[in-house]
View 1 (cartoon, rainbow over the protein chains, first blue to last red):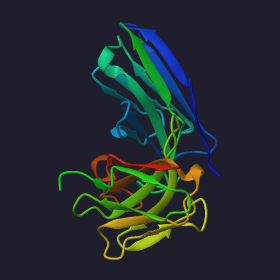
View 2: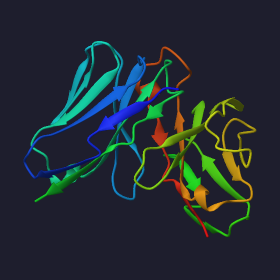
View 3: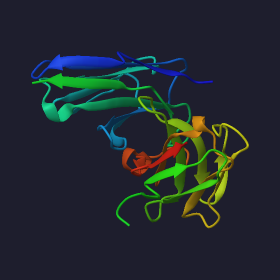
View 4: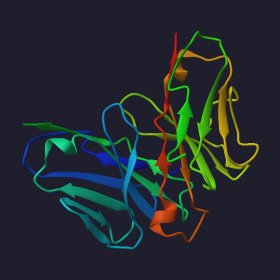
Length: 112
Length: 120
């Protein structure tokens, strides 16, 4: 079945440094979604990418979807303590919200 | 309600006990999902409903797990004869979306707070 892999599993950064997490799928994806989960909380939707090569920005966050629609990345510029949490990518082989496969997530730890 | 509501939030069950976890999705949401999340891991898909129809139950780990959504709104995940390996957070999520061709806002999955199950 479809597998979605994320690296790194853990990332320690100093506050103000940049952070990137990478997501790779074993199969071509129709869409990819990114979620953030704070410690003790539940996943919260951040963004969805659908088009090949798509790039979307949300303030300090930049999301990319690869040309082959098999990989994606999330980049955070100048991290802040509020960015702490686990970032998950989730890919779907079909359209819509069904059939999403989540990666294991990247745990972002920020040292002030 | 404003969001996806799950109950109970916390459940401690003795091994062999049956448990029932309830999910009240966002009103009007067609799609409903159950995920299992072990500590430090990503959510693992269990099952998916479109209205009252269970379209995919391929993620249910064994026949001890059963889910229903009889009227297309509230859903219940039942685990029979619980085992220690069932200890996890069970996340319910809902979405307005149907299967294909949806825009981002229709496609967004909204998660509940989760039901934390500990089997002792």
